[in-house]
Image 1 (cartoon, rainbow, N blue to C red):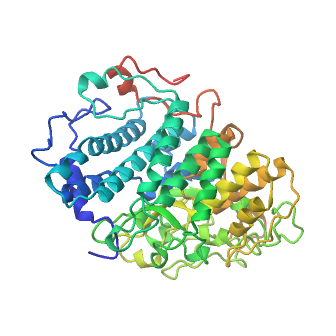
Image 2: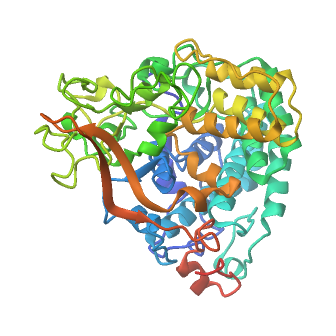
Image 3: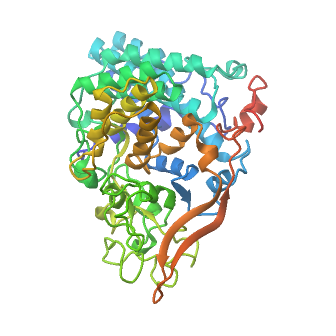
Length: 539
């Protein structure tokens, strides 16, 4: 076993415990008489492996694809489902929505099945102690709450299912009001915290901890607009004194920083054991990547100057050298393109210059074929040099919740409460003044409106390309303002010329209907199979 945790061989049991039939949808349930106590729930190892199987449903590094449905990135393929959603051409028959629904309810079903059966293991195997049993139950309840948080943010009211169902029972499900689901999530995460440890060692690293439960509670309550509950949960994580910011943002998303003090909860990967194709799927074409996602100029322009000003307000900003003197996180988040012959871009890990300008003749040149960046920018987060020569065998863990997010959630919740005390500035400035970021601090006093804008900006740049922007835009009801029209690309000076031009990506022209698009449609197959399920408005 490598240094990775959650023994991956156990995840193979998912295919046994959670086997799915060929029929899609929530009705795709296994009979209650399968894997009965007589055939599976016999030993301590059975209980642990059943819990491990639920972890296999966790989203991973494909989470950053959510950012393609926000203002900070776009898909690289004009024919992709995400591109159609960007255009406002969303419909309930898209496979994406069915897959999201299925995956979430399979995980919830697996959690429910463990909760219904784990007690009987103690009767057969005394080595399953009360402490371990309660911890496994806590993990299952956390993961169930995690998926309900996602479901509500994606679909709104959804069925709240807390027991395994047969086909007849599933066919009668109705949509539970989201406020009831938020109540459920809040209660579950409060109750399980005491059964979970502060940390793990060895092969158990990566399991759900007390801090993860509190951090997920902060996120869920922030999404629900329950500011006091969100602030209290985030404060509880801070008061644990288990977590801190990793000193270098530049290396936070690398192999060498895995399982560091900033990571609260992540999806664990391992080369050769549980690997991904992240480098191949998302890396620049100049490193033989497939450029699956393209950051936009909206994101790039959002990074401040080192003076703490926007590029529009800082006289020191030089539009003919636009990436100099900027928030260092910009260069850690995206590959910087060449601006002109005199202002080159990044050097890729294979020594090639990153020059996507039209006419550059490089492998990254835009508008040559569909596999090149459409905006001129490429993602750098999680693109690691160790994967250069084996881009389909990547093992970097993907962080789902980190301490910087908790600090920003605390600052946001306190801002919405209009409780702008010193703790709010401290939390915000801790993120801004990480050792290799070191931006000027935000100084008091700020009005509530000013601080709201500051915190939202900080979330945009600190958490960029980590899959959280879509959810932020939805809860702020800001998507209809920023998700309209053409997608902005880089500015540049063509080789041998001196006139500034702007890359215009016309393959996707965005349209967002605020009366419809703040939720995804309930998958059409679910509505057809269960006439008790209503559809979201205007689908």
